[in-house]
Length: 288
Image (tube, rainbow, N blue to C red; front, side):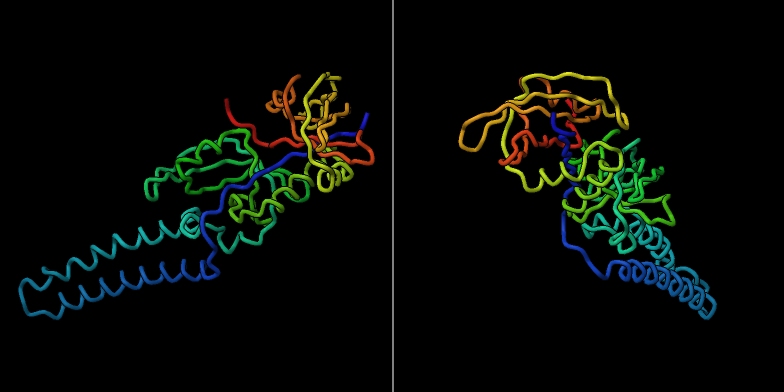
């Protein structure tokens, strides 16, 4: 039997628009401008009231300026808060853009009550595995299109950016860099003994094919909550011929249904040694 044929695919959330390298400057400029407007509005209102000879010097159009400013300032700070600018720019904030990428498993999701163009801002609690293999709890807020809300449910794994010295906050990676996300997943799988560098090499350079699960057994071994499954596959070569191969795979319980007898799975194998193959499955299984 070959070694652990494990290749999990992780897909980052879609990126919606190009990044802006002036994002942090724009954030500060908006806040400063709002505060300056507030200061000038109050100052003008006080000057007008104190210097006017009119008995109604404190009453008039100038009253509207501080009122408008008091409305603009909280709005300016709200729309430049965490999770809002990334939604407007379609990319992570400058602080997180080049930060290390970890794997965030969604623990809980809730709405903050804020919406942007009728799209809700979500507060997401993650259990994050960093590049060093250590895990920590963290929070992220982000505007999520209604069509993508189903992607964020407990158990879903997403690539996240985090600051090593300040792990209380993270941002879901919006770069769309699937290769970086896959590298983070592969490194985590190797650390846990779920796969090996050799198997990942087969996934990269092997021949792609489809296979049908012919038999399945569960010997009882478990690694990091992933039970081991011994599989017998009937693999169809690109020329239409077939061969039988055996492999083992460690899967999260939610993904066991993907390799039941009779299911068709994607595989990669080495033509020079067809018993060396890996099965490719998505990390996040769609809810039924």
